[in-house]
Image 1 (spheres, rainbow, N blue to C red):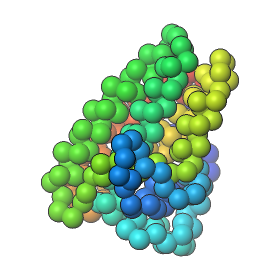
Image 2 (cartoon, rainbow, N blue to C red):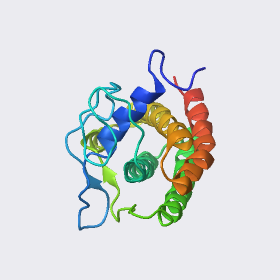
Image 3 (cartoon, rainbow, N blue to C red):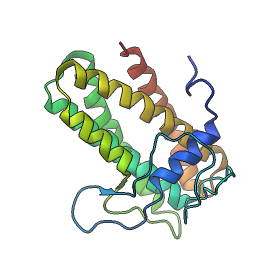
Length: 205
């Protein structure tokens, strides 16, 4: 089974994700994750609107900058952590419960590794409050509102989409990024995300 949806190019997914996750650069002063502008993170078009610091320009597929990659990766980790905690709070059992626990363990480790890598790159800052886009925030709200089997199925759908995009971003940055410590982080993290994607796909109804 291919790692990306049929017909979707890896570059298109990465550019769209960068535009969505890196569009807001102002952290919020309170605790928790900041939210970005109303940007649809699911837009897989390569014609991303120009956004300062993301390396995404309309009509062009440009590599991510280090800061854009850090913003996107930290937001992805935060989304995974919050999603897992929400679904755990709904009393899921079996494979889904185990998967959510794995998300908390692995994405906590990923966030710590990203912090270490970012600290080695001049001019790159890991924000205290990871940036969540409006699209991610909306998905968390949908998951919070769902119950029973609806919550179970929704979480799986969201996880497949999130891991497809994260894998595309990581593998692309690992091969064409602009900061070696972050490229190394991406190369080491991509197989973990690939494993998550395979596992959650196996849980699809």
